[in-house]
Amino acid sequence: MTKQKRVLILGGTSDAAELAIRAAEMSEVEVISSLAGRTQRPLVASKNTRIGNFGGIAGLTNYLREQQIDLLIDATHPFAAQISFHAVAAATAATIPYLMVLRPAWERTSGDRWIEVTSHAAAAVVLPELAQRIFLTVGRQELAAYAHLQDRWFLMRMIDPPSNDSIPPGKVLLERGPFSLEEERSLLQHYDIGAIVSKNSGGDATYAKIIAARESGIPVVMVQRPAIPDGEHVADVESALLWLKERL
Image: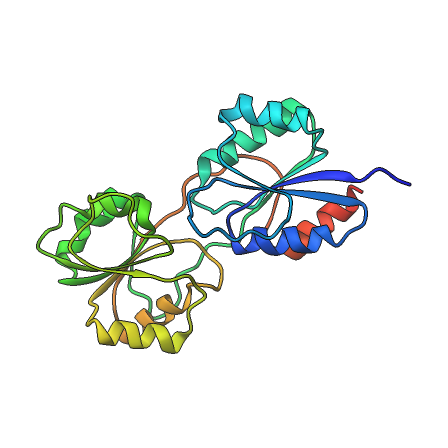
């Protein structure tokens, strides 16, 4: 019997969960999923899942060697840049193939009122000129960047509750996407939202809010993605599965 290839998938996204499920269906593959542990209710798609940090490049390199990992696939969030840089460095050190699954960023279309910024600090600077009531969809770890805006009201949507008290005034919604266009239209209207802050995460799960904003003429402060490391990358799960099959 041919020895299975051990594949480590760095996950936490819906793409990573789908990839882990489908890769595990291959008889030649043993899938190990890794989650950073930042989300209290993670998308666990593999029975063989580890949770927690590796301890930098050295820790990940040691793990790859000790666990005899044959292939490393990085399917983390587009804004999880640090782990992506660690992953490509560790794969290089362990001399194993490496792939990044990076879904395409959203692109501005006709009717969009985007203000593109490079950081949450920059987003907070432009908000006071835009609206009094703001839909903040950046995740719980970024809320502190907006906490000083005490004269604005924020609707804050995230999966898990905030981990500290340094958050701006407003209402917290604990929800996980995907969200329908009708839901997003209703949300903007119900809370009388005048502006949205979003990370350019790409994908379909939360894009409906961008469409709803476009329809209503609401400005969107769009935080751009951080730089990613050099290396082979694909845009979707199908392409990642093809890459995997070619290396079995």
